[in-house]
Image (cartoon, rainbow, N blue to C red; front, side, top):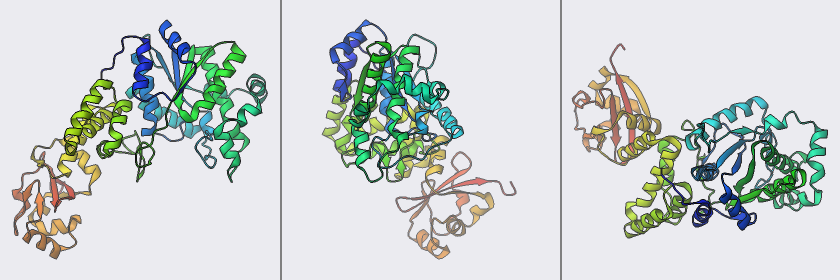
Length: 432
């Protein structure tokens, strides 16, 4: 990944060209501050699950863009605010998580952040902060005195997220009503103790960010900055990173690299340019050229392939991307004979699989029926008569022995019925 800027003004211009600016505090003042030297900037991630999802990528990648431009990123894990939940965009209150679950989630999220941000010592070193560290010990009286007295109820009621919840059937609890005060206190704390002068987030966070900026001005007499990006939905109305099966998780145990890669491969053409600009480190010029080439032959899906490769590599690494691509080639009818072990392991996570002893290779009909690839032994015979079954790419003839089929990596048999029905068999020695 390479991404360079000629200077601090270029950073804002680049974000603008990528469609990553929705609101900012005074643009000229922000540009002037960036021109003075490195700035501390933070984005919050509430640890409501033990993994971030694709919807969080904008925050991570925008922090990385600032880091590559020489600024200091502070990803914030909301160990405290995660116990409450932001009312924005929700029709009802979140389930509250216990402290042990939140601690576990924060640890998991840190590992994912470390794939994208550089935490190694240096002038632009990323620092993970957890707002439970300074919020848990704060008494209610301290909170009311140091935060609550600086924010009017009128200001809070003016926030769209609060107003929408008040007008909803579920209403809003005092707990969630206080969320923006806790987030404002986070910004003020990070400014005072870490020199963090800027907060970023989705456009639904603008009200919370402005509240923090105002608190910093009132309590510290300092000027802070804010920037939001547009909330992104796909052209079909789905939220970014949402699929039919739920969230598109960054944890490979929740969403496999193959499924992750396929999500981006299957995006409609209407979405791909925007996501290439916002979710990859390709230059704006490179994206424009790629999209132009894609439009010349859209059936080749050049843009989707580049997007899927780039985002999967950012999240899971180049080896996982290569295995996902190879697994896709196999599952879409490619020749399995040269498949890598990593690709077959990826396939094993996506299709039904089983382990059998080598003596089961003698009877192809029984093996096919036993795996469930066919409905019954009679169906197996019928499929073999129709030459509709392949083993490791070899068409099986009626009466053929599976022992004659070379195993992949000495132990795998990839069975395929028709064009798209697969079963992966791992063979181990009889008596083993």
